[in-house]
Image (cartoon, rainbow, N blue to C red; front, side, top):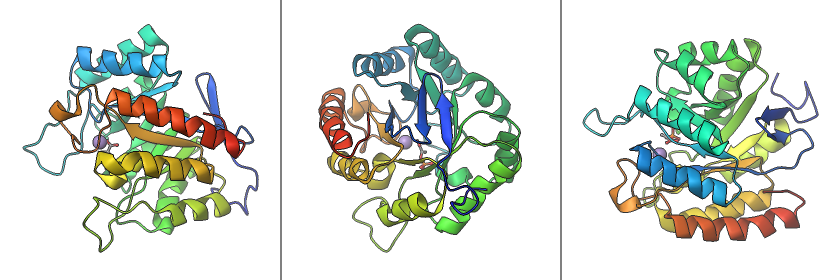
Length: 269
Ligand code: PEP
Ligand code: MN
């Protein structure tokens, strides 16, 4: 169902008042902190998105951390705060499901449901998301082949949900100087051989803020359907992914440089 042989036109997905895929040529920016940490913090993020005319705010509530001793997210309280940002600022909201215990609440509350890299193989999540019609953003597992990535999407599509977005977020290679390796070859492959919208996440791929703007510009120049970028009002105190989040000024500057790049290849940000 995801292949360009089955359906040569790109699938179009409508998210609130923005659409991606099809022949829209929109590069949707998804911005926000790694985690919802407090009302004050997420309000600052929502205001930044509003200021820059960015439609979609993302932050994690149920964090799938590698260690059980790290910050695990605010859970349901975080979801309530995102819902508040949605109604106060008119933003689309995206958050991640960690497991199938809260997937129904996340589907109900958000505009896009994120299935994280670590959950890409979770069939309970994939099948439940397949039974809704909410847009589902699936992140590529960092040890997954493109074939496995596309097969995860097939679980959602074949259960009846046509609204699937793929997100490349870096894979694990022999290289350890950067956190992961952003697979832009994989992005080119997915553009050529699938009919699904493709989003690139330079933040988790790089793991360090210094490289994020360059990777974001490279992905934009390829013509992608969106970018997922982490930004925090004060990255030095972030409770997760502190080393990769941009501060507000760096994010403003980055968005300013992305818009002409998108425009040069006939895309809009
Ligand atoms: C995230 O998006 O905050 C996240 C945990 O990313 P990933 O699932 O790609 O590791
Ligand atoms: Mn993160």
